[in-house]
Length: 257
Image (cartoon, rainbow, N blue to C red; front, side):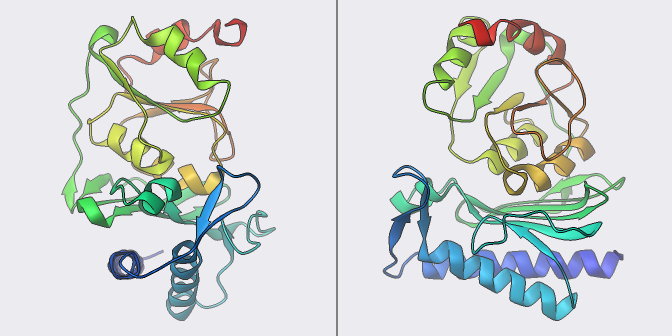
């Protein structure tokens, strides 16, 4: 991918975000997928369709791994786009501004382009491999907490499991937050708004763009044992490097809780 290719995909994602603003004001249906808490809206499908159509115009014969419309199987090629048209659909369905579009380009299972755009709060994160991470075109230099007790931690959400993380951490860190969007929470770690995001049952489209953005901002991504992970790891720690050992140590007994 060239610099001009990167500019083009940024334009496409930005335009999709502008359409999201417009379509959010129109009547849309909210439906359930696998369960009553797993929601999808008409706008999810519209945004995904728009992204795929526009990407194919600029990058013909592209392959996709995406959350909606039967594209949830990883392509059998080494290069493809990973799309979450709206990460945080429940938030979107209720009018909460914390949701985002997430787009990544993956080569040999590793993201080389990552873009996360939250149009209602005007946050546009972007990164290319080995070229740093940016928020609204300004390079990210996060001012993370150096001590675990000063850390702001955010969590994914899984019924019957999230409380274990609260129990393990609530008296050890400054605050715990849940925002309802994995991609944006990883982006928040990248910019230093948070010090770690604990992913619980995430999918590649939730984390692929954030995975690259956080790495390019100087963060670390590991499993609960401290091993490096790919975008296909459902449970992972997206973390400020200063507190990663403390976080791992405090989560060691999580399965016993």
